[in-house]
Length: 387
Image 1 (cartoon, rainbow, N blue to C red):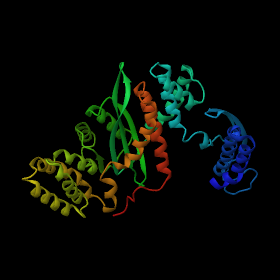
Image 2: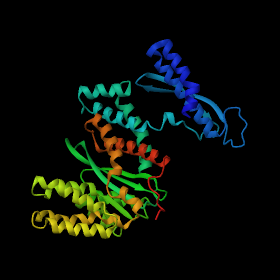
Image 3: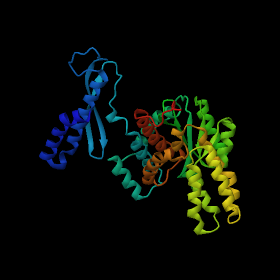
């Protein structure tokens, strides 16, 4: 598709810019997007306009103008139509949810008097126009319907589920609090990743994790063979209550970090870290247990508190040895959620703080939905049937 757009649209766009300078950028962008939408419609129908094709899935039905407000000003696109209304171009939809959610978060802050002049300036730069309360309310309702449907969609079998939480600043009850953003990522039966759900709660207490996991179960999550998560009392208790028969793999990365708190002398830390890595990198469960026993013997006298911690904590990081070797490297930590967390942080850093939990959930959901859609259209993350 990129080659076709380049052949049909880029030359025309560049000519506009060369003739009019950056004043022609708005028209150039319209030219590119119009061409991309036309090509996408042809692929949706299985045939170009006036083309005879046995694989045709429908018929074109002209174009409909659509005006969009952007940072370049108002732009009017020629949106391709089909007779059965089954097509809408991704150029005007997919990829815009998270930006729309960010704009709404900032706009809400501006209207509710929460923001500073800096936030008001950012809002106008992002939106390209001034916003009022009725516009925010209308946009919020439309976006929330889309995001709520995604959060409530039916789930299926996911052999592996990764759970994690991060915190965002939210205004609640007249004060700013740190709210927990709960995230569940699943590896489906086809080996592809899918963000199963997100939630915003006042803390990581058991009651919030239990409600989150119960909702996943009610939406049809089943076939789970392993949970991967960091150590947290509320999460552990909730998991035992909702999915009591599913084993838990404690994140090895965080285990190594936690070990440092129990090392009595600074000069021992590097050696302890190497010994723990050797346990986690063992070829099988028997060797890992042998190395753990050796670790306990080695530090019994020099670091008794470390040994006491290791005997209880490190076995929780060895559950992954019960699963296929080809899967272990990707199942032993919660790092698979790193990209999502980085993207959430990149967006929320602009907003600084949210006026309410709904605003926070809106942006987090939009980012998660876009990333999940990318994952589901890409390559498999794991080969599930591999022994």
